[in-house]
Image (cartoon, rainbow, N blue to C red; front, side, top):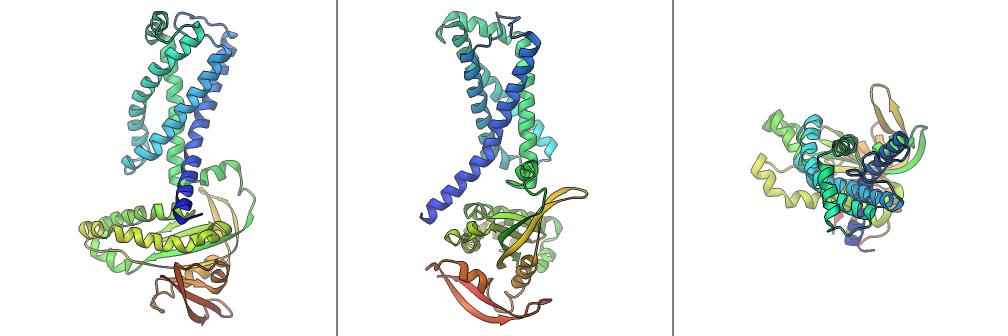
Amino acid sequence: MSTSSTIKSARLKRNITRIAPFAIIWLVTGWVFLLIEVAATGNENPNPDEAITLTLPVFIFASLSITIVGLLVGTIELIWLEKRFSRFSLGKKIVYKLLIYMVFMLVMILVNYPIAASLELGLGVTDEAVWQKLSQYLLSVTFISTIVQLSFSLLLSLLYAGISENLGPGVLLNLFSGKYHQPLREERIFMFLDMKSSTTIAEQLGHIRYFALLQQYYDTMTNAIIDHQGEVYQYIGDEVVISWKLQKGLANANCIRTFFAIRHAMQQNHSRFKDQFEIFPEFKAGMHFGEVTAGEISALKREIVFTGDVLNTTARLQGLCKQYNTDLVITAELKDRLISNAAFSFRDLGHVRLVGKSGQKQIFAVEEV
């Protein structure tokens, strides 16, 4: 598979895994409200002039419709609205988005209700009786009840989106599923990527502008990480720790490609950084792989944490970049696991003794050809 195909596949997979939970939330909450209504009324329609009587075709259509609405909400939320409200607090985001989505919900009702009514009555969508029923429905308590139900589904969706955004893609699902409730052993690749001369830059810009720089710095590298199946493990000031499950990181040299894809993304935004901050952030990184223990830590807050010697080793490798006048240092163990790739060259830096480690480790500088 070509690099471009791999990138498209990674983006598609990520979008599907992010949007699918919205459809599940809407479908499940829709069924819950339907079951409550059926239990309360004995599946009898107390208001046949305005409410749709539940039949099998209506149930199937309603399930499909509510699933599609959930997918649309997820798509709108993650592709369009997420970035536009990124600087708002969670509370403000939910209020503003609720207002936008309520207009969307009204449009969906005006589209779906006539179709459901035509299925119930056995008439065409354009029949006068269908539209008469719609007008009665819009003026009824049943319509208000529908709005309340949709608002609840919408609120759950927005809460999910907000929490998932703060925790990071996949983390919320792992917490819910209990995947790391008991510690697990995994082989992972880690990259510690650190901004060069960050202390000097911070003094030059001041706290507020430096924070804005960091926000843009991390935003710029996001797609490069996603495209090569990386996961952001931690942001530590001006340092980001990126991780891959071993096979994902080795496939198509994703772990190495990520570094250079980030460099390209930064270069494409060179003038933007210069115009806004009068500086251009550069970075260096260390990369290594090994076995870690992954598990949930839940003292004051719940978080998935990795522990193992590989993290200490990788952090020390990143610190060697300046000494060897290179931007990316990896271990011989990682180099040997990578399939030969004409896009990169490796320069042997010899064997070094890392601070706090016994024995020596062979390291390589990596450059793009």
